[in-house]
Image (tube, rainbow, N blue to C red; front, side, top):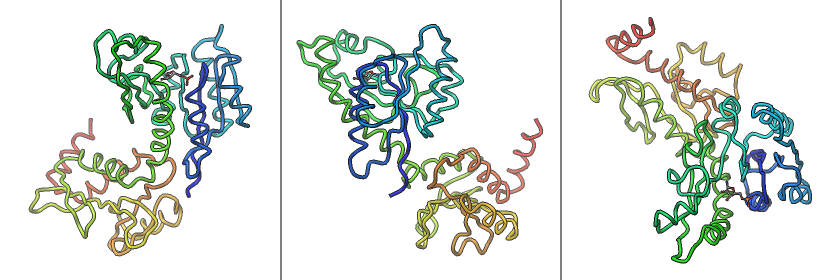
Length: 321
Ligand code: GRF
């Protein structure tokens, strides 16, 4: 199994979701481990549990400090613990924008409503008040706008006629405890998930002008030009020909360039079977920290090298501005 992803969990309260995350992480094959539990509240319940379970803890009270200072102090502990992800589990502070931007795509939150409904506070009272049949909880990516990032997973919990916010909250908690560890595990594993990687490549490739998708030798490929006369500028390769990599193949300028890249950055590039001989290089996608902007740049370059002049001219003209 691949190395486990390291996560830091932020809490302010009892930490029952933290407990669920901890014990899930102790089961066989869990793809993450918790390397730090950090809190803005001294004596928060979850801290004692973390200590008891031998997990490093860090506390920095938010009292009398600015948001930025608070975030910086917590972040320093996260970096020292070498965490790859931050998982918010009842962390009751709003985060500063710069901090969120730095961790975007690497920070998750659990929010006790079926987002996009009921962002913010008092979610259960609001669901009952609205006469909803179900409440629930959502795991989402943290973005600068509160509770507004991409929803990764949800669990629904039926509302009983006699429910109060308290009784409903008490039933949503155990549902959250099922949801959060699973959603975190799926999220940290998705860099090895061919469906996820293919969807990312597809989105970038089809965002380029006049492109379409076509299968080639049983794998998805991306072409520029018309359906009739178009040419392939990228291929998606899921462990093709016994290769260990999930990759996108793009055109290099020359065999020299290809061989140089493969030799100098073997963690990023490889020479694929068959295609390599005609100048296609493989960008390895099933690895830590893929830079999707870099993948996008390669796709664009390969597109440019393949597209008919009338299309590249348009793009060249746009580049002048
Ligand atoms: C959870 O209900 C979660 O949805 C919200 O904060 C609560 C944390 O509870 N963001 P606990 O401390 O994990 O018990």
